[in-house]
Length: 132
Image 1 (tube, helix red, strand yellow):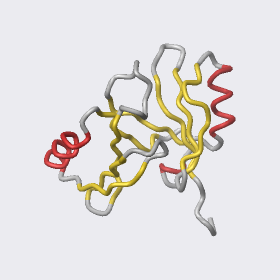
Image 2: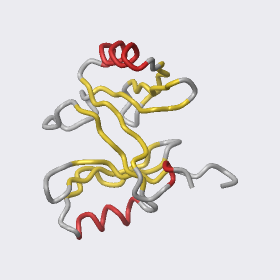
Image 3: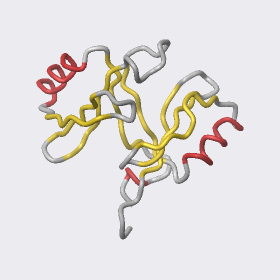
């Protein structure tokens, strides 16, 4: 099982930014990343970052995508076997559900939680490809 598919493993990271083009230039030069544009579930441009052939993360604009009180940041995702069940468990353990389980077309399903200490992160269950 690959880390992307392993329950409890960090599997994605995306930048929430107020200046997508500056972020593209900075991280592209710093790390040698290239980018492919796509559309987010919110309808704005999303940049998928690559190092060679490997997808290494994503970048999106804060405006229109993220609550006003969230500062620009790197935003991690942890894989779970069942995002709906894990969201309920997080709440039962004293956490807070910030974004309810939501489908991401062609990716899977995610939610955002805040732990009892106030630290937020995303949970994700990736869609299985046909034949898996």
